[in-house]
Length: 181
Length: 390
Picture (spheres, each protein chain N blue to C red):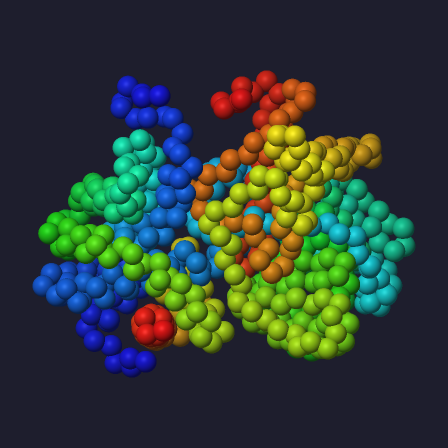
């Protein structure tokens, strides 16, 4: 049923819902690269999901879903950036458009990286895994975490940097090995 | 490993760990200058943000899901942001470790713990005939056995040192504290947020199949007749298999199971993340641990689960309150969750009633570490007009 505002309230197909569900993490990564802030990324993802739902009838199932959904997420992210209109523009429109275009072009790379990450997490020590878990708890901050552990924020940040770098290196190595196999 | 980061790596890490929005803005400005004219830098930026996003989604412990904050009634305004899992609490009658538990008692009945919060039917008893039913929040309890009845019931027990135990669903836990806490999980599951225990006096938990020593940590424990599953969220826990005495140290974000097997090594493994989608049509048998009478597909009719009566609690005069219900849940322990939920998850439930009656949809969640994540309830009045009735 089409509402006065043009939205369609009929239930999207099961395929469409499956597409949206599967795309959540990739969309979150994409949005985060545009808005750079975790809370904003969550908000934009929620808005993007609502828009995707409303536009379900417009989706052409002969085309790839992810680029279409990412484009919608891009609009939502840019709308939020404009709404927040900070006094200083750090990432200008051209840069954001460039980041978005390149991310959409390479969207197929996201899932293999995530699969590789799971194996790389296993290679961390228990302490490193525990630190990552605490750092990524909702509401966590480096300052608070450093205080809990009795070390300086700078020292903690350096430890986190090293762990992230280990993971990124491990992901690259895993993907390279997969490509050679 | 890259010991000395280049400028891009330094900025990326500084941005996501920035101590203030102002600091983040400064890092963004410097970052933008690099990204504008360097495609390889933009690729590294995307890859770094991909890692940052994945760690948020998959590997964050649920800090907002602390047991102390649990028993939230309004699921649909939950502040939880990401991975919450369906809980996997199951009631399986077990062999009680009564002798072990009784050995820790002193004479007399000093109060050792306080009920922090209560939902549903919760009662206490001890081995000298003491009994208290219909308990409410704030009640102080001596050593004894805490019983929680009904899938939607829960109780939080707080000890003097700040240790908090949360029992959910049908569960029975014996407890004492004479300077050393001793617990006996006779059935069901509980999560523990254990304060640092005195040297040489760890909290000791006995189930049918395992003995667990805890010095101070966050964990979830589920006991069935034939196995005990332990999920550790933080700290270290020692688990010993009673069948052969073999033991293992279980560290943060890892799980271990003690069964009746003997001779095999005790092992731990990383907690798994349940899938993002899950569907149960009942055309196939429901997951083990579900409750209800399964009716397979027949003569063109789809499979379904028929509700069965269960004890939902006791009235003030002690009479049983019986409801009818269907429960779909996974076995506790390894891979206990059915599905990973996010704030944007959609739950579809199809049901049919023979009579117009009040209904409750009940959702039990746990954090990524298996710890209690809250119970959520949606009540549907008999007069409610359901929007998609067919």
